[in-house]
Length: 294
Image 1 (cartoon, rainbow, N blue to C red):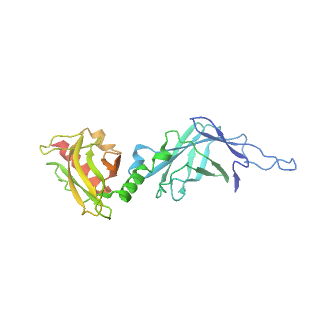
Image 2: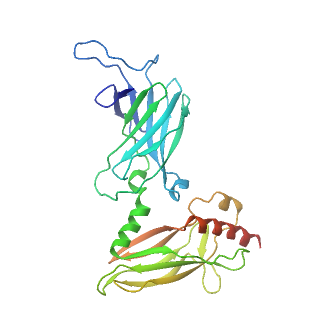
Image 3: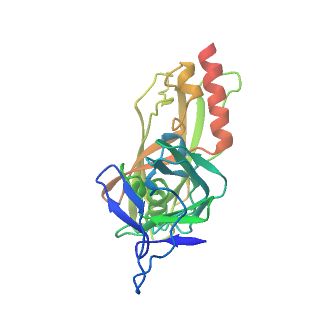
């Protein structure tokens, strides 16, 4: 297997926001004799980017986007991506054919985040069908490398400093009659009785809206719970009604069951994005369909 890195035949050439270009060039050894390169009739150029699509967020995925502006089809047999943001390398082992002039997203499952601060170091590797290995630093055109771990790390920091938050078993009418009721449990961290922060409101999503006692939709359900260290857990009922009823919204839902909880940690405001578990998500989507059909 022939590997080309920045110190060898593969180098990274910055191309502004369009991406990082990896180009194959010939090498000359110390004695002046040319060393072997990939057996292709002309150099290949590959553009690498890291993006996270809306549908990736809830499931914990990220995409390694590979663009092939070269003259020949690329056949990728293995792709890996590693980053200081994540605790382990990500790997995809299956054949991906990328024709000349085309691009393809290679979906990768995210491991646990490191929640580390400081500059991001990351690298992608493509292993091609002919044994060539391409390595380089992908571009991050939308800033997703730094923000993809926010959902987990913001919750983790809040749990460490203030309270754990989680969804308990909900009350979801299977026939769509009446609101669905989620139950938010807030468990303050241990310690001497001292104010740590607050849970202030639960916000509407594109698919679900909190409701008042009369069943009217709200943009935000006021909660106003002060979190005291060492206190017993508190459970808050969050009644919901459909925010919209068009089938397109339900069928293509990506983040409608990731609810935002407005809170404070100490005196600092923070928005916590808390997905409902998968089984609750499926039940909620079915409830929206049943409720809207009435």
